[in-house]
Image (cartoon, rainbow, N blue to C red):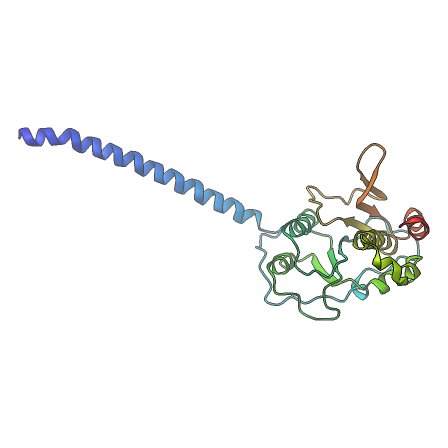
Length: 244
C-alpha cells in the first residue's frame, strides 16, 4: 500500500502531461483542417464548383476569335481583358500567372484573353506546362496566338511593323508591346494590363482611362478604352511619327 500511494501522484502527473500534449495536438489539427477548408472554399467559383484542370487545352486562333471592331460607334462598356506577350517565350512566370489569375477572379463574367506570339497558330494544343493547365481551369481565360501582321492590319502601324530596321533596336520587344496595346484598344476596346499587374478589384467601371505613375507622368500598364476611341487613334499616329 505505501508503494501504491507513492505511485499515484506520479501517475496523476503523467496523465496531466499527456492531457496537455493531447490538447496541443488537437488544437494544431483543428487549425490545420480549418485552414485547408478555407483555401478549399476560396477556390470555388460562383456556382460553388471547384476549378479543375482540363484534360486537354487547345490554343484558339487569334484575330478571328477576338471581338470584331465596332463600326457603329463605341460600345457602352469595356469588353475583354487583354494580356500580351510579344516575345517567343511560352513559359509564363509566376508573376505573369498571378496577374492573369487575379484578372480572371476579379472579372468572372469577362473574357480574359492572353495573346502570346510564341504560341502555335491554329488549333494546336497548348504547351503542357503548369501555368497553362492552371489558367485554363478558369472558364473565362483564353490563350491565343498573337499574329502581329494581322493585328496591325488596317492601322497606321501596319507599315511601321514591316520596316525591318525597327526589329534591330535593343528594346524592340517593349516597343512592340506598346504598339500592340494601343492597337488592341483602338480595334477592340476593353482593358489592357501589363503582365506584372495584380488586380484587386473589378475594373469594368473605368472607361476611357489609363494609369498614372505620378502627378505628371502617365503609365500604359493599364488602359481601358472603348473601341475606335479618338485618343487611341492619335496614339497610334504619334507612335508611328515619333516613337524610337
